[in-house]
Length: 489
Image (cartoon, rainbow, N blue to C red; front, top):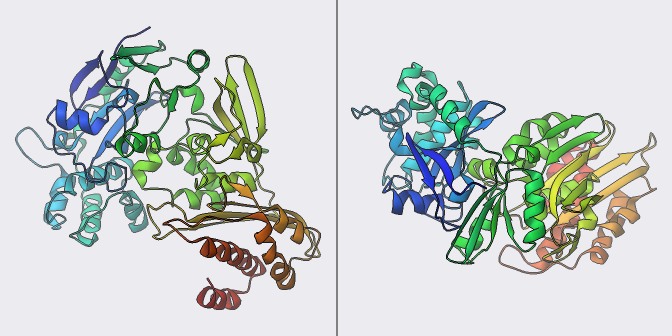
């Protein structure tokens, strides 16, 4: 076994043989390295003031992504390149073009959020040569500013896109070959084990090693993106032991598209899955853009969204509506079950000791079917759902329902199908009258709770209204949809 976490910080090689399993990258940067450009605003991956880039090798190619340092654990950084705002300017003080554009467009006022915005714009600058307004706004979804109104920051992004300089101006382009060589040296198939103060940090070298690790420590906390687990530490102050990091495992990063559907490894991030989903299941891809900000989508995984079993996770309703299956693995074998059967009760999933989610299979919707997904939240971007519903419908040539699956999150202790509503619709013409008659069946399927996101009454009425909206959208009557949206929704 290896006994240290090794990565590159800006231009410096870092090796850590002693490490708190849940030390955040932000604490490491600010407290240990005195790199104070990254700020702590929310400590939950919401405001973006802590944004940095993390680069890693993907099939031999060096790819950088923006991440929230406040909830990214240092233990997940082996064989990566961490880039902070301090690395952008030249040694003589000349600002990077992205920084200069922020100055020229007056994109900073109080300045607290500015380093995070700069890093998000830098990540976009590296990834896209000529981003449009929508792409710029998506890149900035995870960054909050109280002062500027965002328009000067968007103008800075547009300005720097029009004035792309030579690669000599950019440290990551200039150093790319050198960084790739150094990361190749750091990449290992050995399992990394760090122990100290009675706690353990484990980075398995393979999926087989992960299975062995979980067999020995079935109560270990598996961390992929840490977009949920990070808050256990920063907000709930939980002490986790042992902690097992899996975001580096190539075996869990597979995206396989076949005529039957899409297989997603448990370690596939929302960002990585987006393009395949956009091509194959566009409605699902549109939902992905509503999950957190870009930093969260770069870190969070669909497998993790399933594995933690949250009743308000955004992806389980659509996965259940599509008839997805989940494959679980352990040291003793592999088993696959319908995803809807995986969720047993609040905080309880059908996962045996030592098992972990290995992959998901999402059947391809038939060409003649209709899929619609509705996320209801207090704000459009970067918000947790009050409820999220998915509707998957097929009808025959006469308009009779031949297949219907409806699933909701936020309506029960688990993501759950609306079986009574489905039964009320199945075998009947998909008409206004049949939909109106099926609305009351929601009362048999769900008894939602009241919390600070929504009341039980609001959730129940909204679920019923979403069924009506789905019908109006499917029936192609925009005038009726406009009236319904204005009067009822």
